[in-house]
Image (cartoon, rainbow, N blue to C red; front, side, top):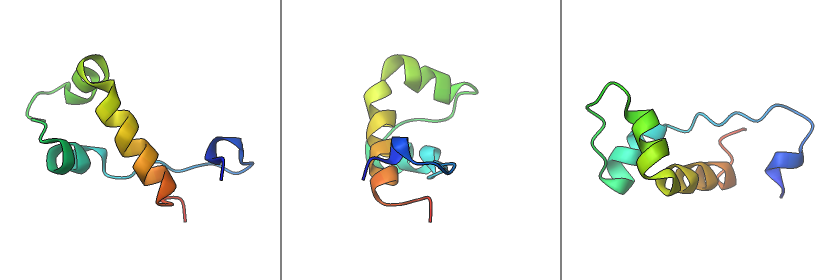
Length: 59
């Protein structure tokens, strides 16, 4: 399924912080942790969103 080409809104709130901590052993203690990971390790975020999208967080 190509989830980016659907007509309805797609919700992607899949617990990004929790997954970064649990699955990728990331330290989220900084105030700008999400910006830091976008800069330093964008692949970790891509993996989490790919997995959450494929697991149908938008039910």
